[in-house]
Amino acid sequence: MARLHRRLLPAMIALLLGGLALFSALPTTAEDEPSTAKDPDQESIFQLIAPRAGEVIADVGCGKGTWTFPLARAVGAHGRIYAVDINRRKTEQVEARVKDEKVTNVEVIHSVADNPMLKADSLDAVFVNNVINHVDRSALAGFLSGIRSALKPSGRLIIRDPNGGPGRVVAECYRHGFTLIEAKVPLENVARPSFTSGWYALKLLRADRMPPALLPRLDKPSRHLTRLHLAEELYRLGVLTREELRSTWEAIENAPGKVDPAVDEPLDLINAAEAIGALSPKTATKLRGRVKKP
Image (cartoon, rainbow, N blue to C red; front, side, top):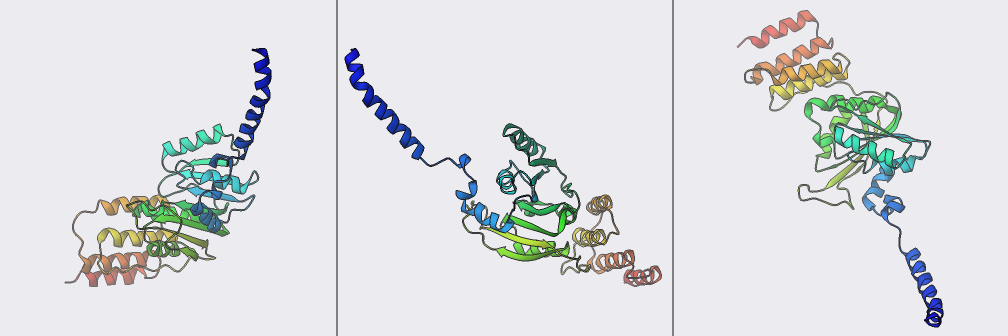
């Protein structure tokens, strides 16, 4: 038996060494290498975000951190990533992963719908993934203005979303002080679930100045939309605070009665024009008297 073991020992060692060599030649898992090498969609989005070592970037609507941690690797130890979400359960999941993996450059923020809770003039970029189309109309002005104020003067905003109407999103971003510099519509190399016709991606820069306020005139006026648009314009101009915008929207939602386009829209426009100083109180009162006449 001892002789048999001595004969088989070299063969067993050779087999073991061969197995180790074969194992070492196998490709590494996704966890062992940057996910951008495995995911063409993520690679194309990273080209838009263009994260650089040492940058400070916010992942707004971070979810479970799918994009947070690749971004953290991209900016390196001297950079910082803010993982922002309104869902407490999601932020707790990211916090747990940060702790488990001992990640030192990710900070988690539990935000609210109309305020991403980001420090002013602190960010090089903001990434918004599959979020913008789900932001309620009443929260959109605060959401976008919060992002703009958090960006540095040369800061960039990257939006990735499925079937959310890029034209509408670009228009809203323009109203809140962003300039479009690149668009990918549709976005290639991304899985298309049955509920969407395709993904798009936008890259915008914080504009040097806010565009002039344009009081909206809707083709088919709705009391809710008309008054909300006007409240947003007053908020953009600094006439309303964020808290006043919230309370204004609540009042709009609770307003009784049906809309009368012949009366409500002109009155809303006159009231807003008076509030921003475009009409004197005397002139506004005179115009309101004309509107109320049959």
